[in-house]
View 1 (cartoon, rainbow, N blue to C red):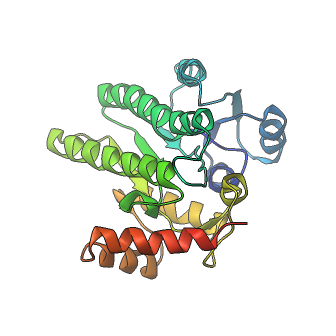
View 2 (cartoon, rainbow, N blue to C red):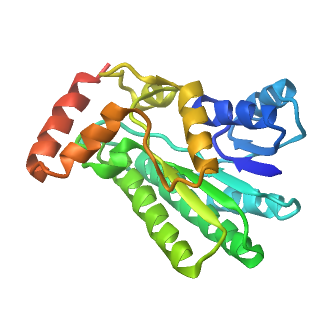
Length: 250
């Protein structure tokens, strides 16, 4: 069995690589930092291929896919992603567009291309890493929240198409709350709530993906919080989120 993991050099992606390797999976790992990829490769127990790639570039996204065509990939984990903190009219547009390319365009391309391959052979698993942000509006992290809404809705729509096709191909979307990764330092914020460990988040996502669960949300409190937002006015949810995000400012 072989899995592709994007954003594999830190956080959830790195923990997934470690856990899958322990289970005997061969791995194809991508990230921007070649040295970090090689260092991770040396710690893993199974055969590992690395592809240095910046997924804000569609050329690099296609490079990753074309490399994988040389191998029989059984699972794709679209984990790479990051956020940019600030008021929408003040954030730097080129940085923001690069983020949207990673969070949306790369996920879209890899999901589509691998889904076609998986459907032809009627097997395969796609795990898209989104966020609890994918169910809300996010003032001060507006583009990040919007990008994760895209990933959630795209994944759920594809899952319904696969169900109606009675396909053996599976897609799932992982929607954690705060996780202790490099996300906040890159976004320029700090945690408002105690985060999950990346190890726990990775294991929870993989365990439930292998069980065939489509929507994966860790912890009872996060499930309850997301359920409660369905019954609140959108303006109130936006106001609460704004106040939470504002407290994160470093």
